[in-house]
Length: 296
Image 1 (cartoon, helix red, strand yellow):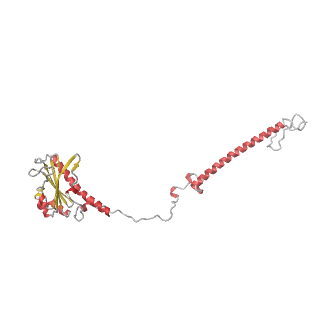
Image 2 (spheres, one colour):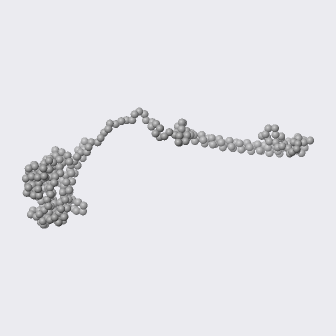
Image 3 (cartoon, helix red, strand yellow):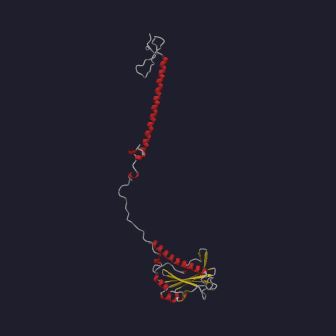
């Protein structure tokens, strides 16, 4: 008499199912266990247990990684923002700056206006820098573009009228000229004498200039390699003023030839020396204005 189920093969014993039938030797009624089947079932149980342990270890590893990630975010962003996406963090403007109390305030200040160089060359009271033909016309030559003018003789006198011709002496004396400095430059047979008359005020210099005419001439200065010029020949003359200085030019050929309107080299040389003289007087004012500003 068999213990198997009627009408089919004996059911397999599943150690994980309750009430399942254990396998016995179907060859007899000795009630002896089937040791091979038991061994196979035990191996099956051990394999399932290993699989469960491996799966559980993997889940534990993932959990540790997540915990580290949360810890890193918490260390960087604080407890309240740990694990939140960056879109949920407060905007930059909402994060407090960390400073306490009102911001420091400063009284509005403004830089003083720059000193005007014209103020220093307008009056002898302010125009106190050293003055001589050498300070006003330094060096031994003047380069303008590609033209090089060689510096000739210089002269300086307090008797202004002695260095002037025709209508100019009377004008200088009437306006209290205190000094007349002269310098000559020469280039390629063309010589230019610049005469700078010094007054106490800009008003005196301006008035003297306004009283001049085409016959108001400064004496040409020869010497130091420059032949006499413009003694009897026709020459170009100019007059102008800047600050307390009135300045005059006389330009001609060292050969004694008369100057005509076609002699562009004469006009060019005269213009160069007029411009240079104006700029030198201007620089004198700028230098004194800068020194006064630095002195405070």
